[in-house]
Image (tube, rainbow, N blue to C red; front, side, top):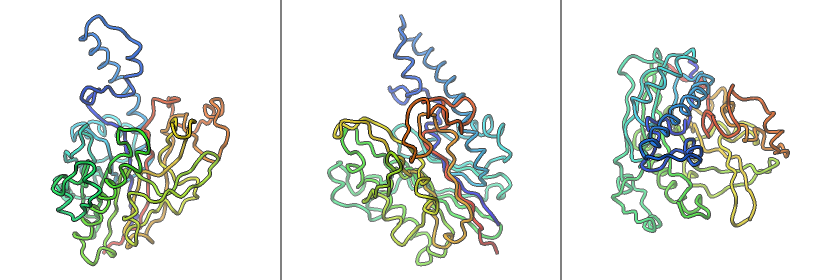
Length: 370
C-alpha cells in the first residue's frame, strides 16, 4: 500500500489576532501607520484587519495542503482543535480532493498556545481507531536527558522537557500500524541577539534526545524494525545553502542525535540545492551586512524499516512569498528578477500574503501490510 505523509508548519493558525499583548506581524505593520482617538476603535480595526489578512493567508495554506495530496499530515502552530477543524472544513475541503478527519490536538507547553496537530484521510482508518498520546508533562529527568548546561537557562531536572510537545499518533493501516512522533522543537531565538542557534542548541538537543528515548521505550530493541516517523519543525539544520548555492556544513546541530544510526532523512536523496524548507534573510551585526540562508527545518525522519520503502520525496514551495529565491544558486536577487519568478499560487505577495514561512515536506511510502 502506498501512503503519502506530509508535515507542514502552517504559521500561527489562530483564532486570536494577538498573542498576549503582542500583535501578529501581518497586522502590526499597517496598524503602526494608523491613529485612533479611542483604544476601543483601534481594537475593532485591528480585529477586522486580522480577519481579512487571515482569510487571504489561509486560502494559500489550504492550497499547499491540497497540493501535498497527503493521506496523513502533521501540522505545527495550531491554536486549538476547534480552529483546526474549522480550517479544514471551510478552507481545505473547498480546495482538496481528499476529505480529512481523525483530527488530533492536545494543548502543549507553548506560551503562545500554538500546538502540534494531526489529520488523516477520513477513510484511511475506522472511526476512533487513531490514538494520540501527549508527552507535554514529561520532564528532563523522566526521559534521562538532563545535562548541566541546561542549568544556565535556570532549568531543573524536574522541569518539563518539551517547549511544545511530542505528540505520538498511531494509525492502523490495512493490517499494520504507523506511529508518528510529531514535534516542534525550541526555536533558534533566545531573545538576546547574537547567535541564537548556538545559544539554544542544548535545549533542542535535549528535546531530540527525549524523542529518541520515547521511540526506544515504545518499541524496545525492535525499534529498527518498526514503522515510525518523526515529523515536524525541528528548528535546526545540518547544512546551509548560502547565496549562489554555496553549501556549508552546519555541524554541530541540536538534532544530530536523531541521525546517529537511528532515523533517516529522505530529503537527503534530493539534489543539495533543493534540500531546504525555510529561507532566512537578516542584517548581521557581526558581518555588518545582510546575510541569507536556505535551510531545512522541517522533517519527516523515517525508521530504518521504512528507509528503503520511500518512493517519492517532494517539498512544496508555491506558497512562499516572492521575496524568497526559489533556487539558491541564482545570484540575481534583484526585485525585478524575484518578482518575475511566477511559480506561486494566485495572489501570493512580495512578503505577504503567503501560505506560511515554511514549506510542506511530503514523502510517499510503500508500506508493509499483512
